[in-house]
Length: 576
Image 1 (cartoon, rainbow, N blue to C red):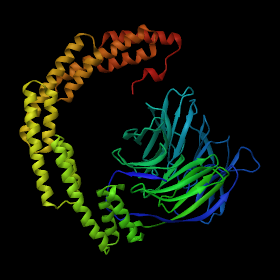
Image 2: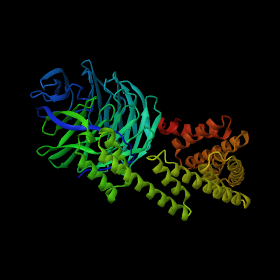
Image 3: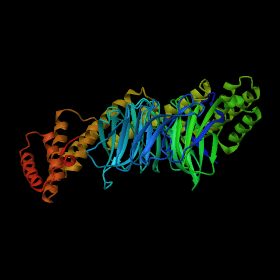
Image 4: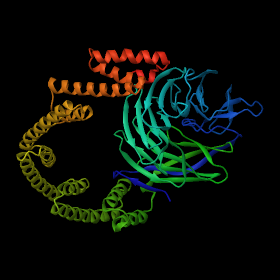
């Protein structure tokens, strides 16, 4: 059974899928997997269908809201591994293992025609104006993400520090999400800037962008939702191997397509609000290959290995309003008794009262649950303070205050706790500073400020502690630099800056250390006859110190060796 871990408790009326009907189904052998935005708001669907007679010919077909097919155009190309179609049907892209084609107005062009690449995944925006792709070189040693436009022009490329496994473009083409084989997830904007980073323990198997700053992913046997800060909002475990994910424009509903057996699969629809599964559809005779959801979230399409396309109509309703009152009370009591938590029960009952204000039994149980939750929080806070864990003690009180914001007793208790916490940490910080332990002093004083943000005395002592730490780090950096330990000196001077050291002196010291580090590494590579990476390091030196005579000399020598060997490559000689 699917399990969901929701990391936010927000009392609200939950509008989610309450019923699903099959709108239509069509079958054509060899039909390509549905692309991300193939299904339209009215249920119409685009698909690529191979010609029954011509081996290299395929048709771009639009199925009407009733499933009636109409061929928009015919194209000729080698067998494509994946096809992505714009909502207008005028632009689409397709990839083989080592080629990416852009089709626009019945014309075909090849992306990055002068470069050999192994394409891992492709994605097209809703309008077709932008597309993204991730690929690697033929040795799979270097991985890259690229953004292109509908003419096939390359807008930019960016090298990735991880092996990419999947890519998605937002509906408006403003951001591109990249998932990695090691669980990395990046969101980039149109200017190639990294908007957010997230990491899971398992490989990213599929990604989809909701709006301009949220990402849905499939990884580790389930699906999850990431917010604009890169935080995991929820994760839902699903039986089977993820094949694709899709979501509507606002992430109201998320769909996960999974393969459950060699020739079987399942579509699971979950609530975008909390990740709870709301509907499941099993496919017992053919495994699923593609998934698409309309922007308004009212239609979802699934393609199967045997060429079948199924389009479903989704109907929405308020879950708690439609639920039986006894069932909601039983769910809340189960949370109170240990199957969940008191705060989960509170959130459920609050949401029920938003949906059904007249449910007086839910109101009575909510009052009882709030009393129990308050007593539990006070006890947990007292226990934490007794062992000296003031942070946990404060967190327990802050947590219960979110559901009892007007409770005067809780307010006074937390204020008293924070005063004791502030006094203790400030005292420990001053003692640590007196014996010269600047790091410990800083840690204690920061906690004192957390306890009382208006404690100016602790902030003044913190400035003293940071100055002492910066002075010590600067002295250590000078010592390391004199010993030729360039990397250690860079780390020390960087630490000094983090502790507040500023001005031309520390800037110049850090620059000298970085120059020494790059020069030492460049010389080591040069002496090992690795001239291309050595040249990169020497150019790094000149970027920091344009008048560095030895670096200029080494650059000339390295370039001569490379020209003789015919080894100059853009990869190792450019600075990005």
